Image (tube, rainbow over all chains, first blue to last red; front, side, top):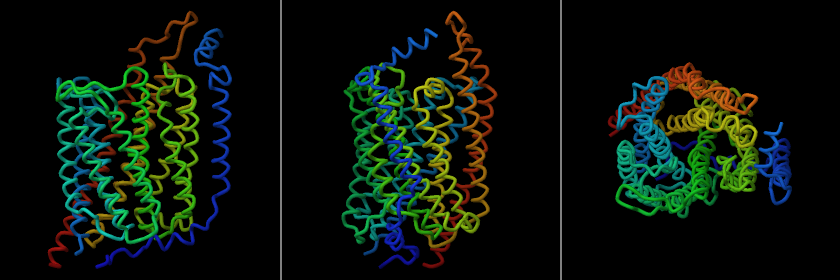
Length: 63
Length: 465
């Protein structure tokens, strides 16, 4: 026995919609955040840039 | 043999149970919100803020949240695999065990048994119970998917799979402990390791309880109730894989400016900010879906629940990553901003979307219509207003708290005493109670509507028989 109340079939939707391209604005966001992430990790990792939380704190107190 | 009817009763059982635990959790939430500005409302030893607060979070996250997730995931899995559950009796047993576990959990928390790990408070015998519950859920979900009658796997199934796997790993690892007695244990982790594991768990509880299963509901019930195809299946898949890839790295953003190594904090911040992209992938997918016909906002009452729900998800997933940034974290962390943030997610996104899914399911399994669309609309506006008031008052007082705590005199001493800061919170805490009452009244409309629909459905079934 199949169900009689499921009139909208999600699978029927899918096939044609898969063809839709990713929105360009979203792609910019996606790759932009990855690039920013690489920059941020380099800048704020003690073993790469020499930045440390403690040094940053002492500098902020000096002001 | 067709077991849909039997399985539907199990789904309904989970939904009704989750609503029951939701009422418990919301009422306790109101109570503790009063305790914040009226200490007389603490009744030691069982009903003090410290004990009630964990009953509030546990009964809502695990009673309302997980209860609804169990039931609705079963429902979605049956629809998308085009078959009943593989183990219907096991699912029914799952329902009974779930309620027993939540009841025991509440009692043990009232009694003060607590592992002192946030969202992992339950002591080890209950943890074992939770793991058994989860294994049953996994067996039934995976079994049903493996035996599916439809080759295609829609995005909602992927989100459910991610939920099952991730929660299992997180829950077991963070609860590893050495029992000292039946009611007391010691965590396997200590010091900074313990903090790191705890927030890896704590943040991903948000990710895999309040995000992935709710997205499964969103992607299923939005097209179903509007009749509009999801804008882009490709976008939903790419957003899914990048979300589950990034989420598990983010927990350490809860530990900015702690003894945790700087590079771990930085890495967590990077992944947290990245999460904006997959989160907004789902947000714009939702907007573009309804964007093909905005009239649906007026013509179908559930559309606005889903669109507002995904809007709060979108706001939550920008606010959350922003909070991870060091300069923002040092102002708002440990203040009331944080409960403001959490409640926008839980009241605005999770409860809104879950309630809309329940509005869809209950009439469907009885082959009837919702009892009152008007009552559902009243519910919508009240919970929306209550939630916004709650969040906004907490953001304001959170920034105020942070600013007062950080203010120093020229010689470096603190400008304000703790009491001076505390007193300034009272008007906002009182407003929050008002907001909570508005939200609660909205939820009462929801419960009334659902119970009347069930009554109508039962009468209909009786007349058919």
